[in-house]
Length: 340
Image 1 (cartoon, rainbow, N blue to C red):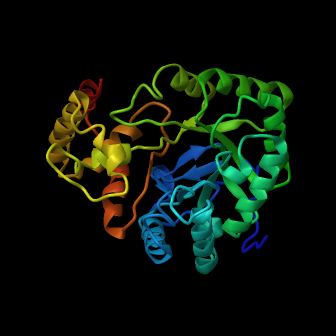
Image 2: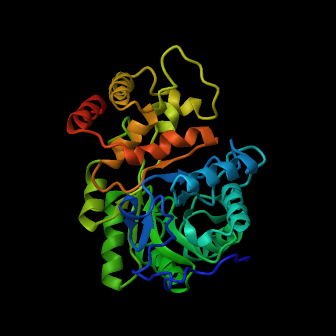
């Protein structure tokens, strides 16, 4: 493993006094959100496009612009982007690792990655977790991961078994905080109870599928568990594969790798209602639809930082602007009713 920087000088990886990153003057202070001992910007930059629809040069440009715009929270996974012909997974982590090494800014950013979905490291057995984290660290060219997610729950493994493996990583300094994605409310509750009972590292965040056209994938029991235990939500598919940018509408044909996923919302009553409501609110704020969709998410209970990806620098301003848009109660109500 190649390490370009050691753990930040604020203390051990579990130091609760650490912010988890250096903070630039343009984005420090109240705009940061706490996730465990970490301090993150209100937009998490999705890394799924790196090594997929954005090559390394384009990815570097997006990463540079994101940090210059005040962002510090980068999300990826060891499985990104295995679905691309010729890829095997790990491409996104490799791009990010090369960028970190070339910029020398490891301690200035919060890196989140995931374990459990890559074919070579499938599931959550202790052996899989311990092998997968080392592979991720090598690709990321660092010696610690700030936030490490279980990408998918693995119900074939008992909760204490995989939590003990994750706790070992925290104690070894390889991981600062742990989190969960794609997990049921029951297993999440069981995991949090186990951590408290056994004195193991506990989940501090949850990455749910959540947006204006997919509310029931988080709201309800799962969100209630997160709220009860003080977990920060970091939603994925925040823009519904691009549908909530407004570029996918009836009668339009968009050339995009994500058009298939977005198209399923185009001719639905809810999709049309949501777009109309977004049009109204966006016009009032002189903002992009994506900005308003992310601002709605940011205003929801437990949400710390929605994830959104950009394959070009030109797509970033609308995403970063979400943290600066405060929606009025009437606007939130309009969007809530349209998306119900």
